[in-house]
Length: 300
Image (cartoon, rainbow, N blue to C red; front, side, top):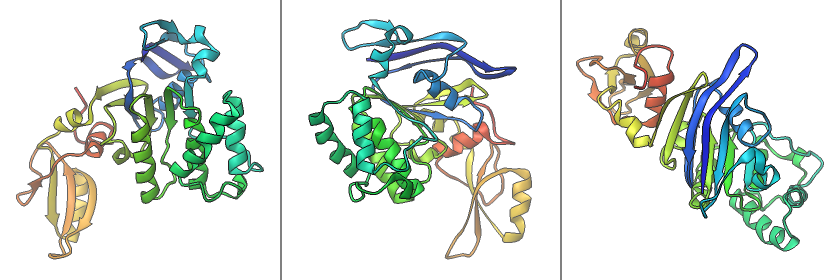
């Protein structure tokens, strides 16, 4: 199974949202990273046929090797999709369980399939204790998990998830991340997110978008290797913090409980200070290296 996206371009008037986006996706998790306005949601809406591209093509190749244009497949392709939009439209007067049954009916599932899957999915997203609660009475995090639950309902081959962990507390984020990872072995999963640590250890590839253009596309460890030697921990006094912030890109500030010193995490190709020591780069470091406002470098 392969989803081949070729030269997808989309403009809104004079604003070029996607510029010849090209990627080939196979089963596994792909992360789509980029700042606001980079084209992530535009791409997802095109993939789910909620928006028409100006040019380019998308082809679906099944396990038997047959390749088809998804626009010509129409409903047959949409049946293979599970979509979690960034701002899902949920029905406030529906209960959680009724909403899931409603979505199962829209997806053409049999009653037996829905009866088997709904309790299992609600348990996985930690909503099994509130099946009778109205959606309007749910917290923001609960609504987010319900939006994910409806996306995975019906066991779709392709999952498109826009900010799936937004609004969740750390424990829930870990739980949802692990759940997505478990079900992704035989699915193509594309996740757009701003929470970089959520995908660092589960994504097979990270696609980095900037103003509609792919600036890098590689496994997480390949990306972090590009800035090896450019991430530093710098101990300093409180009075020196602003000095370092003016000179370098400081990505984190913490305090050493034993010494009381301030510890700065700094991105710099050169040694920022005689007391600085190297730190292992993370994907978040590389994200800030590429998309930060100043300093650092662009991906090559």
